[in-house]
Length: 181
Image 1 (tube, rainbow, N blue to C red):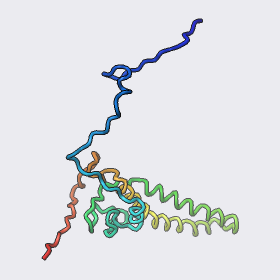
Image 2 (cartoon, rainbow, N blue to C red):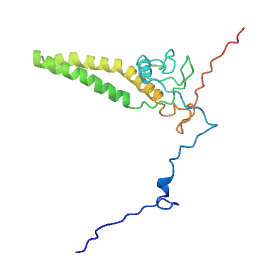
Image 3 (cartoon, helix red, strand yellow):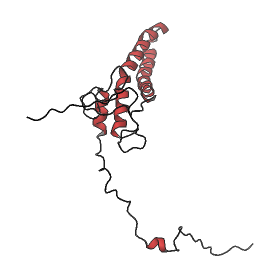
Image 4 (tube, rainbow, N blue to C red):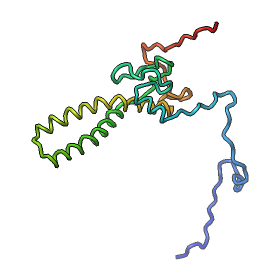
């Protein structure tokens, strides 16, 4: 069986001669002279803290929620659009994960040390689990919405192609400016 001693592989780019692509300088991405200026980065840790407190991720003063878990479409203080969020099922999953890591070790510890009856476990752990879930769900949802805002996800970026208009029946908040006298 004869095998070739050397093998030549030639690749060419479309529309170029061999070697021509190496000689060219790298091209810079096209600039947009009339486009909007690059967006200022948003501080993620600050946004997460504001979301955990249930405050607007942009200004930190307005309320993020209009009710227990309903995110306001606009910040009542600064007018920031908040209806772009896509929290969906992530806050309940995070809450279950966190509460499970708190309650289960405590339950196992109490069982190993005291060996109580089943009804004692039910009286202890069911109310604690429910209370922790109800207490942790709004801060975790606020943190997720604020993280989306800080990372400009899901339409929080004005130049995003997935940006959408406000939901039906929602009127944008317009802040009145007082004239200087």
